[in-house]
Length: 159
Ligand code: COA
Image (tube, rainbow, N blue to C red; front, side, top):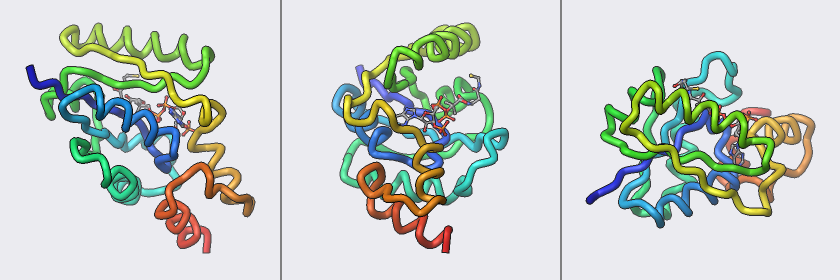
């Protein structure tokens, strides 16, 4: 059986923590589709197009991973790309309650799609995209949290 998994998120921008989860998932499943959500309610710093492009460059070394954007419901996107599994990374116990709730909602909406949790690397348990954005905007060093290409994108965007 060929299993295609979806790794959804806003990826504003993709961090080394996201890459770590994507890499682990890519080794577990035949194919991985990174689903970059438009997330207009989060008012993203990088445009959807930029977030997709950056994610593509960051995961370019993972042969069975592709990046797509989506705007509607995650379960609809999963159906569209024929994904059977949703991947979510767990960084800390505090992620758990929220993630179980979302997994429950998604199961209710589409019972055939399974959510699989992957424990994120210890190195990045404190990391989130908004923390990276905050530090970058204040001129701090975020080079250990993001791919050099993402660092460059921040430099361009922040002037
Ligand atoms: N390493 C580093 N950071 C991580 C991480 C990891 N392993 N895992 C999560 N994060 C960060 C994210 O970057 C995000 O940071 P931010 O809030 O600072 O931007 C934060 O942790 C929360 O992550 P998450 O809950 O994954 O939020 P998200 O916005 O990235 O993704 C969607 C949420 C897109 C998956 C969800 O909103 C969705 O499915 N939307 C579609 C609509 C839908 O179907 N809704 C019904 C189901 S709720």
